[in-house]
Each structure stands twice: as structure tokens, then as C-alpha cells.
Length: 93
Image 1: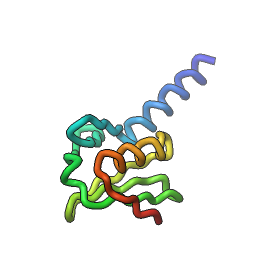
Image 2: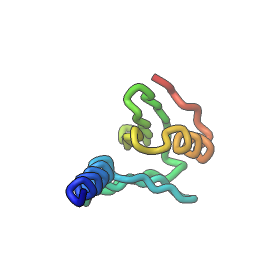
Image 3: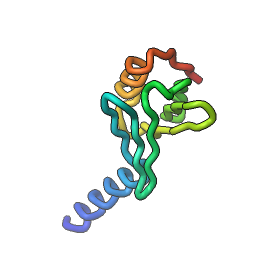
Image 4: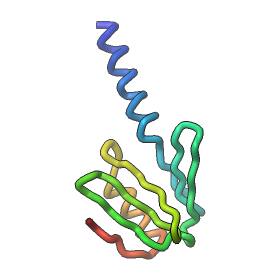
């Protein structure tokens, strides 16, 4: 039983570390992954893409982009927040 609990905890930690996490506030959206961090201010975002089959949201700011793998998170909730804060329409693929 303790080995099963350990396996579940390690799997959950691997999923969290593997996909990073997303943070939003009044100024920007930020993705953190281990030691890497990328963020865009809301007014910098020029395009929002939703790749629903893959569970990914891509946020573009000119030639740069951040991808959010949301298979384990609230895809629609984050997508709605990004759309509300930027006022942009979502391009769905």
C-alpha cells in the first residue's frame, strides 16, 4: 500500500512538473516550467489559438508564442479568461 501511494504522488508530481503551470493576473499571463518562465502582457497578445484535439492553447504576441498544454487543467476556463482580458476572438483548429 505505501508503494502505491508513493507511485501516485510521484506520478502527480511528474504531471505538474512536465506541463508546468499557468498564472494570470491583471497585467499578464505567465507560464512557468522548471527554471524557464515566459509571459505576455494582455495588451501584447495578438492572436489566440485553441487546438482542442491536442488540448493546447497558443497565445501569440507577434512572432513569439506561449503554448499551454491543458489536458490536465481547465481548458475552457483559461480560454475564456484570455479572451475576456484581450478582447480577441479565438481561432479554433
